Length: 292
Image (cartoon, rainbow, N blue to C red; front, side, top):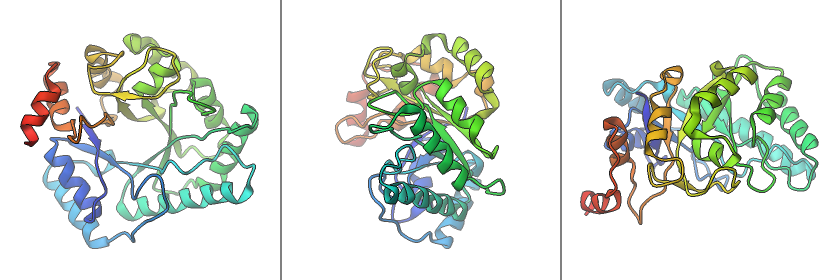
């Protein structure tokens, strides 16, 4: 079971992220290399990176299972203002370079939002940008995240993801599933076998390299994208356990992006519950007891 959560990229950079993951009982994790809403970035410290790699090795965390997430401010779908589109391309290139310095293999990317453009034009913009960005010899693979379809998001269904993948020249690209987004986009997570069959037929399961394991606050096909704690949403604990333990995805890292409960990170207890296959309806109370 490769199970972890989102962690902060602290002043200790990757080392701090690794320490947090270990505190939560995780054997993988996902991080941003800086705040996802801005461009402020510190230089990657090679000594801290070496210490992080050593700590991972000592605790049986495989570096190839660690995931980076690209910042939200990147939008490859809209090129109406060429400077902004060029910025998104160049900033993603920089993030990929930072991943290479950290030894990280995968970076998850929201495909982008059309923001007034025709969908086909937006998809072509994403393809054009990725063909500029992706290099076959890069050590970092971009994973397109499945989106909920909020607003003018691209990548809201498998057909859009497939179209992008088919028109990117490089094979150095994959997919990150998000269970909340899939539910909100209209895919039934209580019939995950059927969904994977659809995915296999359209794209190929070998393209899946990460799963964001989240419950949803909203009903099927709502196009809302609001994550919920595991077992407290409309997908449900049992269905998410099936995703976590699915044989076809056993080697794929599963990452929790569930919301804090008040100021408390839920990950330590959610990881315990998922590992034990036992839903805890008293998560909020137990978290407060854990962190008091």
